Image (cartoon, rainbow over all chains, first blue to last red; front, side, top):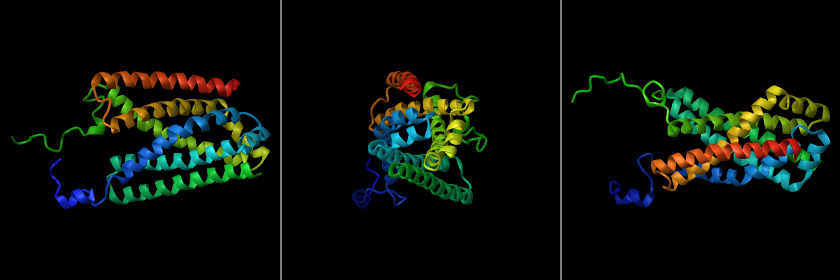
Length: 125
Length: 132
């Protein structure tokens, strides 16, 4: 690993002038999902296929509501990070690449916020 | 030393099948991406379900009815298996990121363990969904 100059070693950055931030951030959301998914999934599959009142009751519970909102936030961020890597791997036309990366961020944020809004509305009802 | 085949070589994503025999390593790697995308698409359906549950009993019945129809159940079943696969294979990836588990024997063992764990947890989840 002796190919970097002293200055580069101090900055911890390579020729791209950016570091491993995206990589590290994706690992953090991955670990977050390892904790959240079991807590989210079991109340969710119990609520699924029941009636309106039962769902309102399950997500009226603060723990279930907060876990669901966290799962939506961290989950869609993890999805955005994962899809970005897939897009970067397979799309090589620069304008198409940029358009897809932007659409990826916008759509993932929109779906996350819509879901969080819906769960909050149920929880506060 | 001249490369007479320059520009006419198979490129990595398209080598499996035609050039390389599918192996547990390559197949599981591709499945990790495919399941990730599948879970994401199903996540959009889940958001729609929550939105319906926050709106009215009629809208909820419509969304919930669609998600628990036979086609809805099929999508949710595939998403569930995908989720547990991606969950356990993700743990495998995190260990690789930490520099552990690279020996070929370990890769095989953890790969099989991932498939078994995903299957078991899928059955546990479906049991809870049906009788929880």
